[in-house]
Image (cartoon, rainbow, N blue to C red):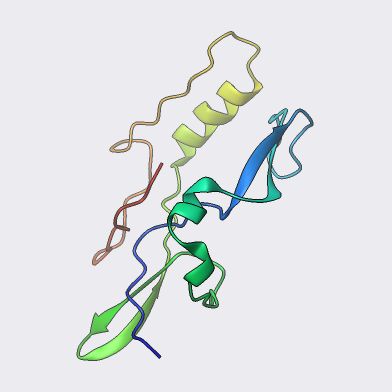
Amino acid sequence: MRRLGPVQRKMPCVFATEVKEEPATKREHQPFKVLATETISHRALDADIHSAIPTEKVDGTYCYGTTYKGQPYLWARLDRKPNKQAEKRFKSFLCSKQNSKEFFWNVEEDFKPVPEGWIPAKEIEQ
């Protein structure tokens, strides 16, 4: 078997997605759902998905595999959470009936500090 490369970014959905105009079950105040269809996306086909080797995602989160002190090591994802003040501002925005359609996060001020030795994920696609 050939050696697999490290995974350093999120993989987009293999299937084409569609938006349904019905309330989301996971997010309060979100009036729509984004669902995967049964159609393989053009991006997956362009990446030659048919010859890909599927692997198991061990812990259900984004992971980073690398060598640490000479040994292979798997690092679990750290979600960087908003601080209480920013979370309140965001919830207020979601509940407001104003016409403003955009909310802006200040990455430097709105999030809790990261732990020492934190390694940011590479090549995250928006």
